[in-house]
Amino acid sequence: MRRHHDMGGQPAGRIDRTDHDHAPWEKRVDALLRLLTDRKRQIMTVDELRRGIEGLGPGAYDQLSYYQRWMASVGENLLEKGVITVDELGRKMAEVEARWRAEGWSGKEPS
Amino acid sequence: MSDAFAIGQRVRVRAVYPPGHVRTPHYLRGRHGTIESIAGHYANPEELAYGRDGLPKRALYRVRFHQSELWQDYVGSAADTAVVDLYEHWLEAENS
Image (tube, rainbow over the protein chains, first blue to last red):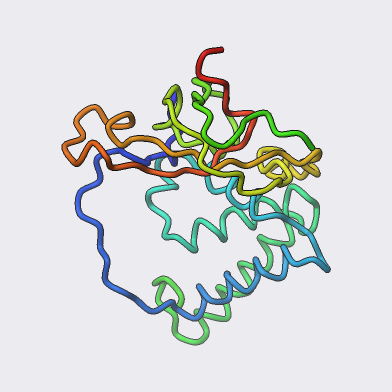
């Protein structure tokens, strides 16, 4: 059976080839992965990143953007490895959200 | 390290469908191609993906396929090909 992410050769319509800038948060996600995978730390591998992205499955895989998929996988991997706990992550997310709201954030995707 | 396949040898991609992380695209399973070159030897990404060391290293081959072998409705030139990197454990000799 073909797994959802393995879509090479499937009908896909036209490809958007226009160049685009990356938002600051996307660059931070990229930097975070470089640090987690570097020779000094070796906390996770890009192979584990891919496994986590593939594990999102239909639905989340399609709804999340490229770097949102990365972040979802990095989070799962760090939880699995015990680098962070679910409770720590939940508390930090609430703290960050409260800070954004105090700064006037309305619930849109951060940039 | 002795490689199982030689440059120019005809091979078939194994038509197996394990769950989990693999590096062999679905559209290549069961397709026939020719060993183009040996890209090197690397830790097995199917093991690295689960936090293991992926050793011993596996030979990674560049395998050339005719596009008409990959796509039933291919309308381009019969000379068109695609080259894909594939690990040794995904290949078998064509006449095996």
